[in-house]
Length: 440
Figure (spheres, rainbow, N blue to C red):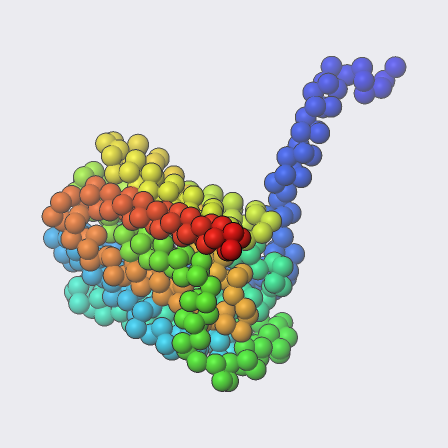
């Protein structure tokens, strides 16, 4: 007889195949990457990934040239550059949210991407000239921040123009996979390139990375329906900037989430400041070690983004509280680690918890918001995340210089504890109010 039951491996096959099928039902890849069935999203994802890769090349090179070449290994100088790059998210907020809702997002993104490519070219030429000074890097960082303030909310809201509402939460998670995959590769490659060809050529490579996304945006001119670009216009002629704040205030859980984001992002998101300080002061490392540390953190970030993309629905408020506490514990472990390799491995857990928190926050706020308010609400969310990062950067740099790099990481742990406590307080308050209403 030649039946399969006589094979010695038939028992293994009978057990393995059902196990694989069961696992696929629980965590199906088709669910994780379901937005890729949309051809427009595939085009967007490919161009955005290359652009994100170039962004991380430039950010790594910029941070390194500031702390290693243009200052006396001063973490406060890095904090200043971070502040200038992200502060425009705050003071341009009245304009950026309006622009994301009122203007044609495709045209707006095409313009901002062109301007960012020009700024990268200017910075690259300054560095290659051999006469670059700190104030020039600061000026370029500030100009880049002003352009990015318009780019970020439009980019997030534009995703809703190319995918359905059902795909939106998954697309947000996959966008984070793209961003953090680039963060995994970019800094490590940047560290090697800085050693081989110098920071100036790294900036020039970033200029080329804008071409695929600009090409995708150009192709969208004919691939997207006319209604997707005009939907927001029909609803926002009478809308005002403050409507975004009113909308968030009317949904109190969104207000609490913004406050939690401010706490964690102001101190915990400034990894470029405390990782560069740890590299040069604690581990006496170079650009390749700095790039390696950012990449290790990105491994956890990618994992967090994939978890978010794999969820059937948007993250819950309770889950956001949980990952805030997870972030606090991760920061404590990283701050206490003694050797370089233990520190590097623990950065994976830090990246995982931070990404779960930020992606869950963005996904929750975007899905919970009516489409006509989405541009302004996302502008407020991104201004909170990036603006608070800018506010906290000088403080984190100052603490790293005067008290030590480990204490600057410990500040992130404190922010996570406060954020989780705030969320728990709100939940208990809501439950108490519900009990009082039920007994009345």
